[in-house]
Every structure is written in structure tokens, then in C-alpha cells.
Image (cartoon, rainbow, N blue to C red):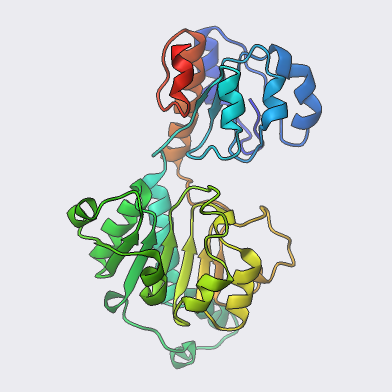
Length: 319
């Protein structure tokens, strides 16, 4: 197991013990140094999302049968290299849908009500609500969702309860499917032009890398807010900082960044119209237990000759 996020591995250790398999843990600080030693003999890997396993790494996994990513994304893995080597790749989709959608909506509410500025004022002893600046009624605004998967659909459901108009852009989802969720399908250009809040819910691909860049920020309303709980690289961070500094957009709520953790001197950490949380949208007691159990079970299933759930490269199963 390659991990530096958790301090306890009781769940995994107990599951592997019952299944009759040993578990070795390597921490993030030493995994590159340890990797050449354990790679040739390892049978399965539990991998934290933040660690990269590229082609050269995977070539060294001579005995490995499965890589189980402990999360809902797998852009940190060279899928083609794993497939060529006959290694099953699994992930854990949907384990934190409620948590991430709650977090996205929390950022929307906090920015809408100018909570960071409220807190700053009260800490300074200022008790003048009129100095907060213009605050618009939330129920008269539009939320634009970029991507319309499970998390975005939950954001839409919850946002509509607050009276927000919800529109979405996703070329892979039909209008009829969005109609069922009472969400208006729109194209990307229109969404960024008129949405008051834009919440990002796309995977990181070549097409979505820096999807939000200087050109896009130039077309957004100067009263709009950008929310990101998916992948930091979807936003061109330098362009975002410029857009915030020059007033091209009103603010941002970010749970993910291009570089994590960020440089402590990053302007994003000191801007009064920006909320940055430490990639924590997925966290709850329930979601953490679920992701650990499901990813560990995937490794055990493969080692026992069973077909695991949530396989990224199913073509390997027929070999």
C-alpha cells in the first residue's frame, strides 16, 4: 500500500488478515526509494490518488495483478501501461457523492453571503453589515454546472431546493436526461457567459486540462463565482489569479489546486474573495470507511481469482 494520508490502517490490515494476505505500507516520503525493492514481488497495490504510477513504474511490477486506486479518479495511473502488462486497475466511483456535492454547495453559499468578509470584519471589531458590499438574493441567480455526472446531479438537486436556476453543460449527457433532473442543457459558451455561479464536475483529461483559462475568464460576468471540487488542473491558476485581481470575476471557492499543497505565498490564500479548502470535500466518517473497504476488497477479490467491481480496463479480465 502506498499512502501518506492516513495514520491508521486497521480496516485494511484486518481485511487482509482475514483473507490470508500480508500488507506492507510505504509512506509518501519514502515510496520512491522503496519502490525498486518491493515492485518486483508485489501482488497487488492499494494506491492513494495523489501518487503517480507511470509507464516505467508499471514495467517494474512483474508479479502485480491489480492496482486499486483509493478514490474516484485514476488520472495518476498510466492505464495503457497497466493494460499492456495485464494488470487490473480499479477505482471507487461514487463513494463521496454526498460529501462533495455538500462541499460545493457550501462554497456557493459562503461566497454568496460573503462569509469570509463577514468573519474578517467581526474579528476586527467591525459591526456594519452595510459595508459588506452588494449581496444578491440567491434564489434569483443561476448556477451553471460543467459536467453532469453523479456529483453534479446531487449539487443540482440540492441547489434547486434553495431556489437556484440550474443549467448544465455536458456533451455526453442528453437533453432528455437533464430534463428529468429539471436542469436546462446549454452549451459551454452560453453557460460561462450568464451563470452567476459555475461549479466544475469533470474528470481531468487532455480536453479538460486548463478548460478554464484567460479566454474563458474574459467572457464570464464580473459578478460571477467559480467553484472547483474536481481537479485543480482544470483551471489555469495563473489566469484565475489575474481574473480575480483585475475584477474579471467576483471570486472563487477552491477545494483543489494545480499544485497541492500550495505555496504559502500563493495569492489565492490571501484574497478576501477566495475560499480555499485543503482538498477535503470528500471527507466524512462514512465516505472514508467506504473508500477503504471497497478498494481493499478489490485487491482481495483479484488475488482470490474473483472479478472485482469498478474495473477501469475490463479488457484485461478476458486474458
